[in-house]
Length: 411
Image (cartoon, rainbow, N blue to C red; front, side, top):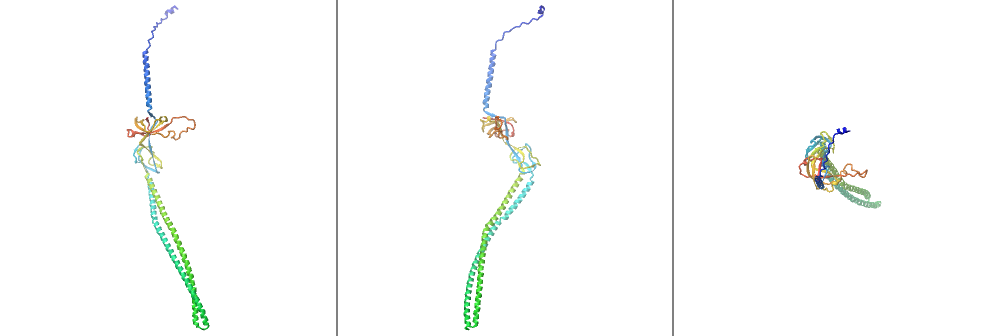
């Protein structure tokens, strides 16, 4: 044990130093720095909060513009396409041509039909004065016939009266002859007169009787002639009445025929106008200036009316559609200035709030939500605000519809 105690190494002596005095001055500086940093951060946060209240911004925004669809108005085969994709064209520039052969033939045919209808109008026009003259002549002739018939009736009536008078005269002469014959017979029987005188009295009596028969026959003939003349008068009056009734109807029919031919000519004229329009539609021109996009037409394609051939992106009338949250709109109104940052070029343009939206984007979508059915989850809606670029700015010509932008609206 003593040997082990001798062989055990000795431990070094531990020197205990007294603790350093507390550094109160360094701790105070650290607290001061923390306080100052906190004050700076608080001030910066407050200032940023105040600044954030002066504008509204969103990254859900893009450049919009008019995309004019160019389509065919007639059917036909495309013979030439004058533009390429992404080519800038001016308003009135020829874009596409369709084979015009069929439409030239159709125009020639309709022009021939129009000439035929116009000739028919010219043929019918003289009929109106002819019918007027013919009707007037018919009426005048019928009136003359009536006058002649009336004169004939008057003459026949006078002749009938004369024949009646002659009949009465013949009857009176016949009565006298019979009385003379009776006296002569008595005298001849007494031989107071000669037989020759008696025979002469007999002849006179017979002649008087024959004259009565003749006068009676003439009177009957005169009476029949009166009836005939009256019948002719009735017929003439009927013809006159018929002419009076038919004259305006015939004139109306003639005028109606002319009007019908004129209507046919007008129809033919409209067909010619339509044929000319169809022929003009074989050449398709740019309605506005813009850049060609989505060109789908090629030479040899057979197109149909309404078929879209290409689009024209109109670059002289662009705006920004910014989809702001509904909670961002309470202080927004038209006329407010806007700074628009364009992602593609890293430039900032000036603009103005043009109009506020009429409905949310979801309401205008193809399938709007039905909040009344199923479980309802409230979602902050977005509304499209239209922002118009200020005119005459550098870089506007580089913008294209669909580019992403970040608008910042000063409230």
